[in-house]
Amino acid sequence: MNLQLIDCHAHINSEFYNDTWKDVLNEALTSGIWVINAGTNSKDSEENIIIANQFKEGVYASIGIHPTEEEKFDFSLFEKLAEDKKVVAVGECGLDYAIFARKHNETEKIEEAKNRQKNLFLNHIKLAKKVKKPLMLHIREEEAYNDAIEILEKENFSDSVIFHFYSGNLKQTEKILNKFNAFFTFGGVITFTSDYNKQINMIPLEKILLETDSPFVTPVPYRGQKNKPVYILETAKKIAEIRNVSLEEISEATTKNAKKVFNLN
Image 1 (cartoon, rainbow, N blue to C red):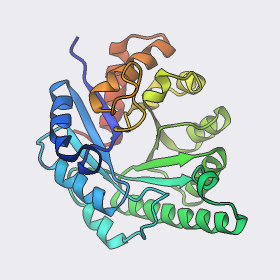
Image 2: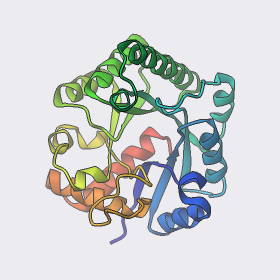
Image 3: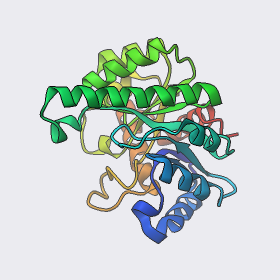
């Protein structure tokens, strides 16, 4: 079976794979899998670009600061990084309220942290608008989804937006589909829980993307191992099962969607 798949969100760099990242990417490319490495701070955003440029085709970068990072957004730096031809998106960026349950107890500190995340998110939106590249979002917790939707509306964001590791509820899914040019990535978690099955069936196939979030959230049957792009096949199989369609249809559709949203011509 000759499938092509695109891992739309991974972290294949020296932080997580030491000196084996090149082997991991070559394994993916040999298997017909392209990879987009998502930035979580300025350091790995820059490294992801360097990595992507070591491959003629099939490895790309997204640049941004994860909402739980404390780094300030250097707009001029990220604008310069966005000029590279291998940069296909801005992010991962967004709102992560799940972290507050682990790190904060005081309401005042929580609100301060939320406002910091919102300001960081706004800078990414501004950059994406300026460089005309899609947004790669990291959103965690129901309230964070509601706030992110509200911010995108207020900013009149009309370009493509990718909801990485999508976990919004059905009402939020309907709102996002109606209001934005949105795409939704699903990864290994769907192979060991049915929590996202209704969303996977609800979202039009032309809006669905695949990801691994490597090295995290390894799918069945590889649980307990470090995740890597070649395992994306298990996620594609599971989406085909949930939607009751062929693996070939999922491969063709999600690859077409990824090439469209990230302009991978």
